[in-house]
Image 1: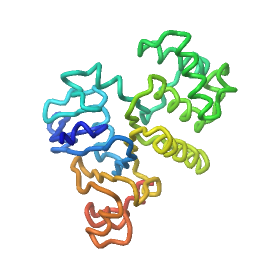
Image 2: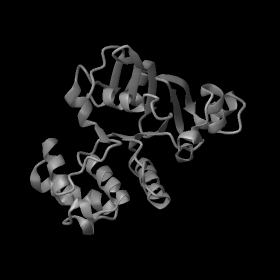
Image 3: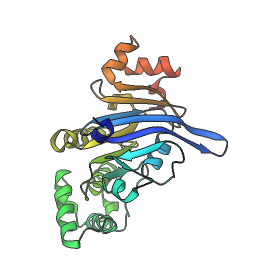
Length: 251
């Protein structure tokens, strides 16, 4: 059986340099279809660089990256069709309405206008913001903007959703709402998720976890298995042991 065919994301032997500095060093990881995977690492660990390679913002010149079996270098169109992304930096146009942001993004994916509006309203309803569709984005709170970005990323119905530090700068309530919504997407829709964070409390011991530090994968697997393997109390203790720092220090 071809195990790669069962993976929403397969990264194998990927490295990346910025000049003389190695940001990623022979990184490999995989996410089964329909799984939530936490990519855990401090700021500067290489999480954003990895996302840039998966999304083709950067070209991977070593190893391979496959999304739903499609190599992002050899078949970028097919790979990116299966991919939704929420970047760490806000990407909504604050002077456009919520719906205008949604339909503009849909047009980039080639969705017909009428269908795009239907999809936009359906996804906005799921994040309880369909009643704000006509308002300018600048009128929304930070948490609401993030929910719109998640809704927008799902317009073209991808199989894999990448989220890079999606709760940064949000209050506790907004963070909880976003985490719960994304986990519900996994449970209800079978969406595959790679959730990058430096906040240990956003990751469950039942999740698949990849610990990334200084561009290297230090551990990968189900959180509880990683804890048992290292005879530790919790994931934070594992990280302390492997990296020599506390995840909480970056919170």
